[in-house]
Length: 336
Image (tube, rainbow, N blue to C red; front, side, top):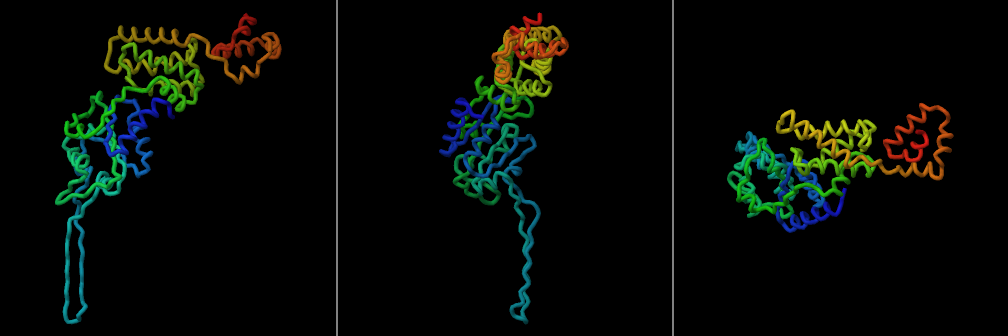
């Protein structure tokens, strides 16, 4: 899904990476860091290696280590009167992702690299600067096509370590605070399949709730995706009088606002803010569905009611659905 915002960001990163620079995408959860990094890596046309940062990771997990021995045995009987036997044991080196990527010229995406301890990442200093990977007893030259992209979440509090200045100094750090509204709507529509008219309302509501200063996932498009997907499954619509929509917004947005622990009074205030925003943004009936509009084009309200028959229950059921979709107009006035 590409918008001008995404295209500009991807083009900049590709320009840096192709020029041999190392890019670091830093931003909160849900800001698209890993997705963009993987997308850029695929554009380079080289094998992609994904490494996840972990507190238990050490240097050996990146570059490899000695594991066991390799034995070789030679029995030489070239001259029948002379017997020559040679036996040799050598340490067996088991490579890891970074070593293989440096040798093969792969593109590495080091996701959440600050979750690894700084001492584990020290080996990257010479890789990024001198293009050499130091190994025990020697080193290997880094392949000319080797590239690496980093991601990190500076706002996360679980298992995050500070990155050493020497490493950050070797990167181009791009700060991601979230997408623009057009991009968020496009991503949400792609993941949910809802009509764009409803998706735009959902995104506007989530952004307004976020801008109200509540403890939500700043810059994350995931709440909008969750609401849209739930509406799709439950048959709800982004309309202020739809109980499914209101309950879904409560379930998704209020749970995020309670993440840091709040009092009952604060929770009630946040719910009031949410309900007010729903009415401000979603109270207007949804635009008429083009398919239904074409089907009823030129049909007067009285004629349409006549075609529905005399069953009042059928009429009321259909009118309820039409109200949810913003199609009641003169038809609703005729019934009332």
